[in-house]
Image (cartoon, rainbow over all chains, first blue to last red; front, side):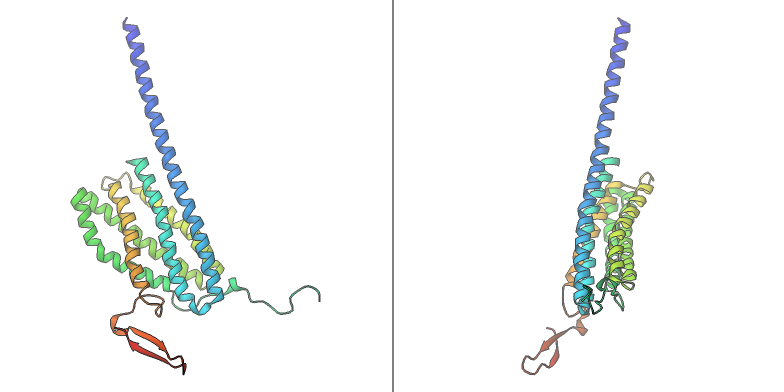
Length: 95
Length: 172
C-alpha cells in the first residue's frame, strides 16, 4: 500500500513538473514571438520611411532639412512599436 | 546611337547633406526635455516602487535619451557622406540600437536595484511622451525646419504676389 502511495506521489510530482515546464516553454515561446513580430513591422516601416525620405531629399535638396527632421521623428515613432514589443517580451519572460 | 545615354546622369544616392544636422538639434532638444521630466518621473517611480523603482525609472529614461542621441548622431554622420549611407545607417542603426537596449536590460535585470515593471513602463512612456512633446514644437512652423524658434525671433514670411517681394512680419 505504501509503495502504491509512493508511486502515486511520484507521478503527481512528475505531472506538476511537466506542467511547469510546459508553462515555462509556452511563456518563452510567446515572449520570443512578441519580440520578433514586434521588430518586423517597425523594420519594414523604417525601410519604407527612409526610402521615401531619401527620394524626397534627392528631388528637392533645398527642403532636406525639413525632410530629415520629419524622417527622424518618424523613425523614432516607428521604433516605439519595437520598444513596446521588447517590454512585453521582458515582462512575459522575467516577471 | 549605341543605346547608352549621351549625357551623364547625376547619381542621386551619392548626394550628401552639408551643414548642421537637424536630427541632432531635435535629439539635443529631446535630451533637454528628458532632463526636465526626469525628477518628476523618478519621484513617481519612487512613490510606487520605492528606491528600486526610482533607479529603474532613471535607467529607462537614460536609455531613451541615449537612444535618441545615438540615432541622431548616426544619421547626421552618415548624411555628410551620402544619402545611401544615411539610409543604411537608419536601417542598421535601428537594429544596433534595439540590440543595445536589449543587452543593457538583460545585463541589469538580475540586479537587486532593478524593478522590471517601472523600467519597461518608463521606456515606453518617456519615449512616446518626449516624442509627442517635441512634435508640437517641430510642427509649429514650416519656415523653421529644425525647431520652433524663440518667441522674439518668430516671423511670418509673406510674399507679395504682384511684386514678388518677400516681407517678414512679427508673428502674433
